[in-house]
Figure (cartoon, rainbow, N blue to C red):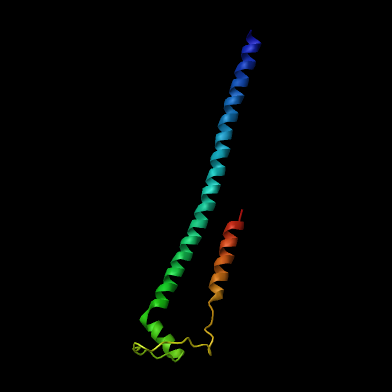
Length: 113
């Protein structure tokens, strides 16, 4: 009876220890996932801040005035019969590098293990 009691206590202790170890491993894995998601969140918040700044800069009256003078655009009050045709002789430079930068940063954030 004494041997079976000893083995039973040993088995019970082993199962309890395995449960505790499993909980610790699960907790560590969850903390890694949380840190990864926080890093993605921080990257996205930084992008939002940059884009909000860029939008505000593009809406700024001084910037608009400089762009209008750069492209020789005259703002006049249109008459009721006046229609404005788009100017096609000059190409407006595209801001493609920002969208490429955002795609690269997003891909890096997703690809990191």
